[in-house]
Amino acid sequence: MSENFGKAYKLCSRKTIDLLFNEGKQLRAFPLKVYYSESESLEKVPFQVVLSAPKRQFKRAHDRNYVKRLMKEVLRREKQPLEDVLNESGKQLTLFIIYTNKEVLTYQELEKSVRKLLVKLIAELKGEA
Image (tube, rainbow, N blue to C red; front, side, top):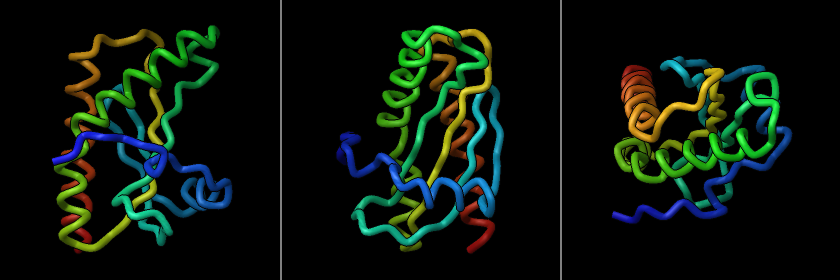
């Protein structure tokens, strides 16, 4: 299937993000924490996401940007199982993924963490259905 990760996947609505933190659920898979909730979106994508690397962990902007680029690339390549589950159930999700480690992981380590996080998220979604 398609591995593109265009602008439609980017969550920009401030109201939706606030609602996500207030009423959403939370999962952890070190070094990632995700807030998620079901949503009604006008976009035709199964989920929308915000990627965050806090300034508290990475003082330099180029480090934060590098971590977010790594997370985006890993998510782009590993999103297919999540999309399949969401398309089958007809749900749409909003996600806010936060990188919580103080050191930058390698691509392979981050890939393992994202896979583990997506497996947990899929299990949660199937448990709710």
